[in-house]
Image (tube, rainbow, N blue to C red; front, side, top):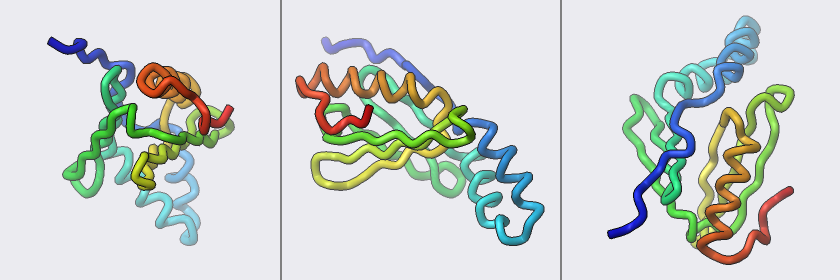
Length: 129
């Protein structure tokens, strides 16, 4: 038997991202940003557990990406929305990257991911403070 999978966070992007981009949508120049935030709000979902990170997204939520913590070699977090939410980029062992956009409570989620990576790899180097 393995360890029971416990969910740390499950949900979609921060609602502030949608609100700001809808307000910006009143300018024609920012319409692509508005459409992107609406698509994220409708179909992007994150599930972060003690075993993996799952991202479901794409058109109609048809794409799913699962990664395990031992594959992560680097993570970077960027605050957005005056620090209320943020983006994260996880670099994997094979050089590919997984982008998490408009993550609510991104500081706590980043710390949790850092702890999980450290528990599996024994190091936290490459993580931005």
